[in-house]
Length: 314
Image (cartoon, rainbow, N blue to C red; front, side, top):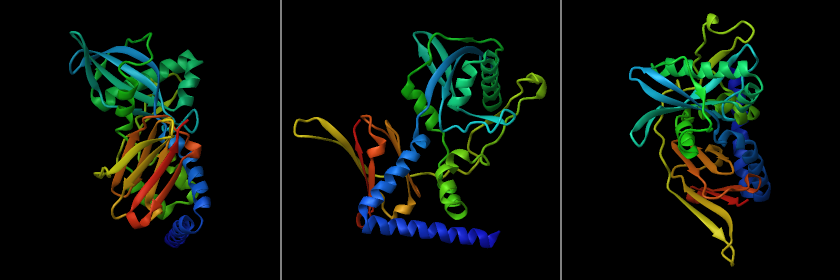
């Protein structure tokens, strides 16, 4: 097993070295390769979207109105089968107020396929709602009312707040990146940040709380690794316009002192945000304009330890 891991490490190291050489010798081929990786990584950087909102009550430790935003998020793994745990992610509770009314909002995310299947089946929808409430009780030590109703609006609070809440609790991946480079193949490297479930604890509903026909388990996604403090690198973001002042593209320059190889860079770009993770550095930005991810290019200048990302506007 140890010799196999060493052999795989050698292969992966050779790949990163070849990629560095490609960036120097054939920039056009390098940019095409990066574009493909950005396209495949789009799902990893996709933001959660609101699906429906529930209203219930927190009974303990302090009675209060509770709104639960059920969201769909491609970054949440889909269950492997009907008998496997259903992964979900629970955000931090946030207290809000309107005039004199004070209430709590909690965001919960499932994979889109899970919620779409539940839209067609009221039993499944009720079950997912009960799972979300059960997980909230277990994680936050709340006691919730058994009654609830679906509101007429899809989300309580702003979409921007919800995205920041859920995306802000994701685990820093320094440990995972090192593990991937040492132990996994290239294809696994592309998908392991989504499919790796070893890091996630499971919360299982007792058998008597769900029917035998619709029995479903639950898996809460949260960090079990020691969190590493990540630095926010210096960067410059600007919109480039043509002679008629029509915006054409977004250019991002990120300074990464101490980084000397493109192999250290993990970059994902979606239409409206960007994520860069490089060793001790982490930069997540909401983009001011929608960009064309398929035409986005990235180049690392080793002499200046600078990553340049060019993103044409849609």
